[in-house]
Image (cartoon, rainbow, N blue to C red; front, side, top):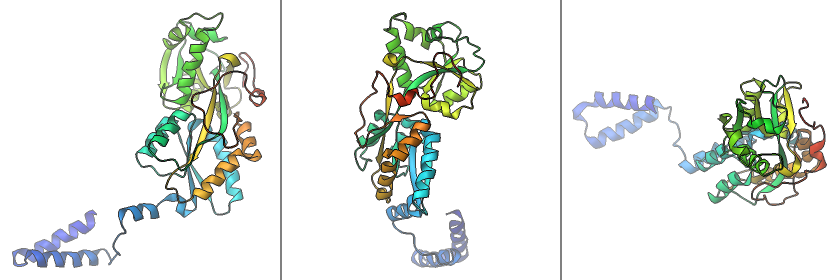
Length: 323
């Protein structure tokens, strides 16, 4: 600490050359203790870090994918009502960013990812306390500003020269899924084999998380973007138009969650996972556009395609209908 070191230097100057090295060290130690108000010696580094862990102060810390922002906000509030004195602290970001933070030593009790790839990074680092459970699923849609300045009326228009497209970066789950959709459409009847390449030529920005894609489209900085259906809940009604992606070419993304090793609130973290998988938790997620998860099923590698459950259709609009 700068203040104690400065006090020690001043004392050393006063003692001068007349004081031997041993005497100086003894006097300096006593002076520093006096300056610091005789504070007790700090605990060992590991114990000090554990004492400052947020969850020991009644806070359950959850690292969650950005696409879960509204849903987990509501779920966290409901969980707090069930557990008096507990606060759920939510930290949102791109799944790959959160995984990197955890590997670098960030402390949390739970990690909820938008794909198994980011979860696998944390698993390989030995940071998981148990196997992940899939608590939700999601689908992709194409969005445009309500004014539709790029005249994107159908999926094929994404490849028209001059259309400004924004996607999440390829390292982000939503960005990788979007490119998978483009691959599938390139093999679909009525689309050119080079559809993906032509669409990506219109890419003007790659974002670190899917919410940034929604934001740029809302502000009119892009003509179109590909996001999760759940992200529509973050946009005020009338600001965004939606183009549906046919089920056979869409991606159904699985969302795994797992407790983190070393958490002092493992039992409470497990209770939060059970809440998400309960009827009440699933209802919260469905209100925000998510599809049902599995009751403790392990996360799948990659995404699945095919017809989505009926829950995804509720409140959905076809073609270029407004949200």
